[in-house]
Image (cartoon, rainbow over all chains, first blue to last red; front, side, top):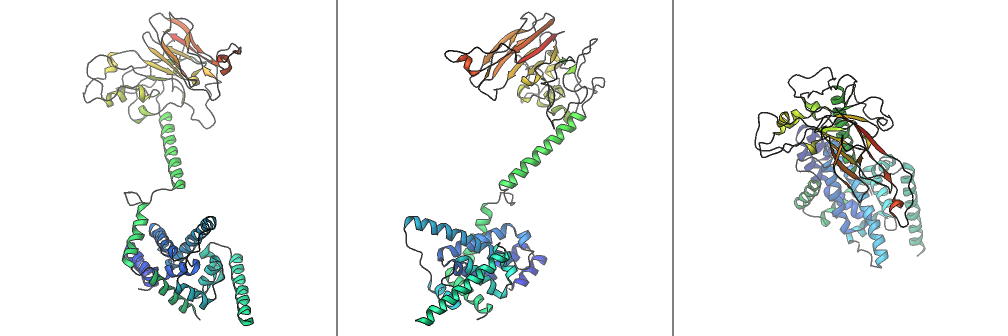
Length: 170
Length: 295
């Protein structure tokens, strides 16, 4: 079921059915997005489920949005980034090794040149590229200003260029 | 490379990381309902709890204001209510401790202990309805005395009916008992109980013979402590019991044994250094004084 059909289902059917439709349609994408943003496999499922749980609690409001899946993606991204920062501080204190990044996430990063970016930059680029969301919408999705998102995108492109230069100089 | 490609890649990653939708959905619902009350509604957060507290407080204040505003005056007794408490205050008492704070509901004329007119002591009727449970915004609290003896206890309804409008001191009302009594026991016992606090300092209270006057001085905000309240004339107002507590509060109970007249109940707030070694010499002053007129 498409998102638009699910949203339509919310207006004509039960809220529970509409939520399940959105969940079924977008859950895997949200998990993948979180994994691609943080590179942390353990965070992906947890952050996505937390975001969907919040959507479930606020479904009377979230379900009326044009794209409830984007609301969930935003919440999941922010939850994941917060948790990723917390874990990074803890591992830095403990001296523990970094979490292993799944192979398919690494392949996605290479494919989309996201390897050397911060999670927020990755989130900005992924949401910007995801169905061509404009900067204003990405800023709204991430809860940041448009200037901040533009800065993230610019820094990401600069890093792309640096990455490309390194590749070319080899 | 298009957004559709990214969409497909993300979905593939998600499908591999969390392949089963059913358990994931159950986990989401469990997580969502874990913070929802048994009625299915989300529990209020801190902000929600604060708003709820404010709403309850506002509702209580409204009920209080309505109760005060609807009190009958001394000349308009409500039909059917027994007269139980007869304590009154005399006008002209110092206003410093009686002046309501800003925003505090001001008692309606005739409310609270009725000012004693020189000619007569007004009898406060017991009004019906919810006004009987409204708390007084100020002034001494009068409650009927506890019933004595093994006889049947008054019911809760009888207790509520016997409580004057300005005397809803529930902790002193008789506890409801399964035993029922058609007639309020208070009707057979004419004595009343007056509870005074430090806010009543400066007032003049009129009581009748046999009435009980209880003084309850709460712990001061500073390090000082109250002395045990005492009577200036034990023949008029007799000291029955009294204690000064470690937290600075003090409590005493007096009775009007039978002799008419006037007497002051007074107490002082003593600084902590007065009990130190060597003690300081605190100024001799009276911080709490209520004049009792036994009619």
